[in-house]
Image: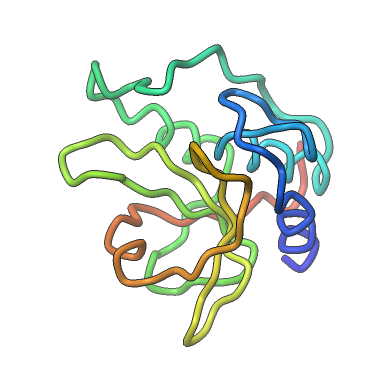
Length: 144
C-alpha cells in the first residue's frame, strides 16, 4: 500500500473542484480516489455519471457505499492499514458521501482528502472523523 500512500500525498495542494480528478488542477474527494486509482492501478473500471453536491441525499440511497463495495475490497473499520480508502457519513442522518485515503495508521492516524473550500490536505483522523467513518476498503491488488 506504499504506492497508494505516495500517490495520495502527491495530490496534496490540488484545488477542490467538484467532479474533477486531475492532480494539480482540481478534484473532489471522489476525484482524489479516482486519480490515485489511475496512478496505481491504471484505467478506471467505470466513469461516474455527473453528480450534484447533494447527490444521493434526496433519495437516501447509499450510492457511494454501494460503488465502493463493487470496486474495492471492504475491510473491518477496526483494523486500519495505510493505503485504505475511508468512507464517511458527514451527518448521522445522511448517506455516506465523503472519501479519504489513510496515509498513516497507529496512534496518530492521518488521511488525505479533498473537501469544498480547501485544497487536498492531509488531516489527523481525529475522534470526530472516526465517529463519521462508515467503512474502509482496500484497493484491489490488480485490475481485471
